[in-house]
Length: 523
Image (cartoon, rainbow, N blue to C red; front, top):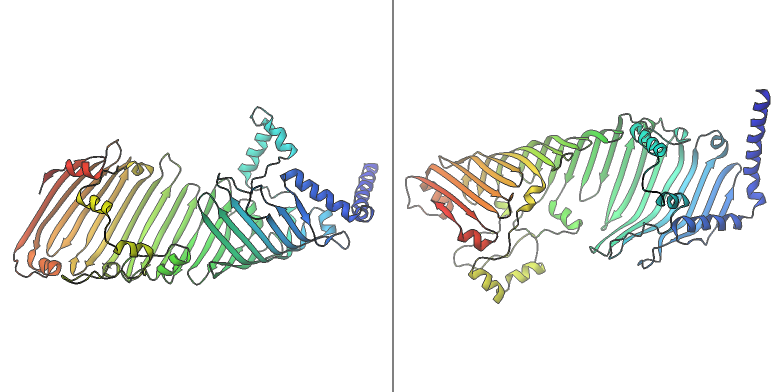
């Protein structure tokens, strides 16, 4: 045993001497060329180091490379997929020998990353060349070796393998400075660009809290990022760990404070807070400016408790405020079944819809210009006289096919209760609406509507389960006072009395014309 210990000790000493002596015995240029050759072999693309290149061992392992480039895919728009002005990595030597990783510095200066998808839908981060291991795997019959499969299954079930040496990970100066990331999709025409990316991470050890702070610029707005994790080691080993994250910018503020666990499925929960000063400004910032009429779509605030357990998602004790609207409710989503299932319950206060409506046009007056969206090209074209094609469409019902098969994509149950609704001068009292969607059949059931002393009920059914859409409408309004209703609705004060209204209609058809032609019912 003593001889074995001496022999192992001698081997360790020889390895250390070889590692320390290697940079002195092998020219730096040779090491660089071999490194670049390995990148070429693994990815099929060229890499270059046109600036400083330095490798030292004592007093710490240090790797420095300047003007590093990694070529783009053939036919790519940018010359390079990645460019790094300077890369500096420093790792403590003796902890590394003992199996711990202490990163004294990991600094990435002015990286530029170009992500592209060509017209065929192929991304540039898919590499052509395969590693020898991958090539060998591709020549097999396609069955995973039992041992490998078992190992993968065991690793997945534990969800806790942090990798060799990772348990002793310590981070010192870890920074990303002045980065830039662009994303271009030639197939869809989507283009995004992130500028001024700066990130700093502090992690004394995996058992200490990890704190990070950073910022990025997108669409001329600075976004500040503050992610935090109380116990990274516990998170890597599948234990519930506290998380606190904040995203802050002028158009929106988002925060999450809760916990999460790294297991075979996502499991997290906590308090979510979203604050948007202006929905219109947010929409313009993300590239979808709103042209909706009215003066609304201002502040939005949402708070509540988020819970995620694999395919189960829930948003409980939700509080929602949009402009002057306020409400609360609960929502859930389950995606583990063949058809996803959504449920929701929402209670709202008084809804004044007038700020969302275009200005009311008085008889004999010119049509008011739309507000909120400005004179967009779409609005300008809409104001022009109708073309011959639009006249033909207005003269009759459309023959364009109507497809309700999309109703089969999800099953849902939504219950809405409203304290009251104001539309122009019309005042609707407390109302309840139940919406059910199952197996392609959508049922909107107005179970209660208080209207000028009377009560209303309505049910609209849209059946998309078969090849031909079917629609049914039942409406019943009883004992409402006609005079105040007609005054508010039409400024007409010549009608008195109690009124009733009933309507029952069914129809079937694959186009607007067919639906109108097949109307059947009574009123």
